[in-house]
Image (cartoon, rainbow over all chains, first blue to last red; front, top):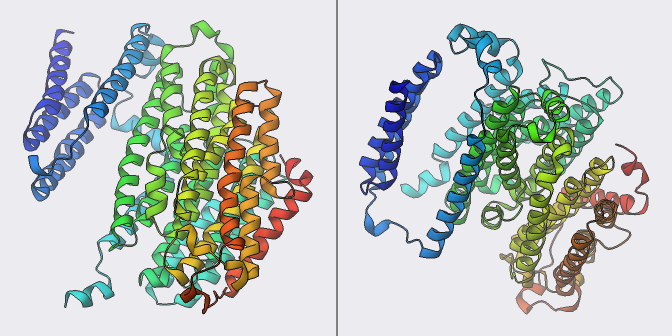
Length: 169
Length: 464
């Protein structure tokens, strides 16, 4: 239990650092560490598959992509869009309201054993596969359409069109 | 299910047709495929409706009616696309395929019985649109619209997912029947607080998708920046499908908890009406006016969810049909006018009645239908929405809605004034606008249907 509090504390600290640090590259690096603490959480919950996926996809692939984009964009103070103080205050109030609502909701929660106990090994790959290819077969198959759409779109947007090429010479 | 499979395969077939440069076959094949899909849906009408595939989808009359409406409107929009996409780019087949993929998503949203399908449906629908909005690669407005839509859409999907997660946390299921069971069998005070958080977040996500205020900020820029045909598709098919999904969730699961969400939705509906109508009133661009008016129409359609009853599905179906037909006509006319004159300001409609009385008449009927004048489908839709509100005794809402209907009439009639009572500038008058055959057919179908529903609404109302 104390290990959980340590990791939870670290993830809160690092996610706050992500927001408050000035340098965007540092911010992304802190985000990577935040995701790493999440991975530790998943392992503690015995959700091995989620932990591995989180480690490889989020920490590895997506965050590195983020870093590359940041380097290409060359963000600095001059290009940063100005936000009026009114928008900032409104955003802060709205965010705090949402936070208060959720804290209220979570405070009233009790630990329920009904949902957790029968599926102690639910996070293992084997069980996940059984659910995915049994009950959730239709959404699983339909997500292929989603991926195909994204693929067609990516090619369509990235491809040079003939008219464009001519203008470049 | 037949329709969904047909459309997915059709889209892949179109990609192959594009590969083999069979460009003239694209539109006929697409329309034939859409007709086949409607045939499949029609065939399913008389079959026993039970949740299929481990309770993932449910093809009852409700979902079939909305699916057919979506396919039909998509067919209308696609028929207008002849020669439209070719002006934008070489890769016409991919655009057809993306629109069809998006339509598959819309059908999933109409027929879902499990949150997993709702999520995948909304994603398929939106991802295809993010790309279609940005197909004018060199147009800054189109790029901006695509990026804005993508970022905001991804954000709102996050809200929706978080809401779904909280509901799962409270009930342990994604299935609508089991959620319904949970809400009905648990006394109000014992329902987990997580469930209420889930309702809030799902409400935010869905209100974003239908473009209701205060989650509407993306709508004007995205509708304005994207190619007109895509705007027509977005503001009709996507909106109708999102409302079908919205209503299904709330009518199946949330009714017992209406004390919690009704005030929220009431506020959202009122804000949406006023923001949409008052902003539309001050626009100088026809396209932007239609974008704001679509926000206002979302407000009217929220009435059916606010006072859920046995008539709500047919109210949304009627309103959706009326609004979609009129929008398709308005956007199609805008394509023609913009091609001729080059801007989408109100002034470009000046003196159209003298040059092309048919086009002017068609636009007038569409505007009257959007404004809700009797003898058009729009009137029946508004009448049913107001009737729903009247039944549930929301007097304040009724008064505010009536005020908004009057504001709506103002800006729709402004278009008619430009059509008939203002004369065009001299350079334009020399060249009359030609209406291609496919536009003529679409205009005729839409206007006849609008008037038919306006005069004989019973068959549509009794459908569901």
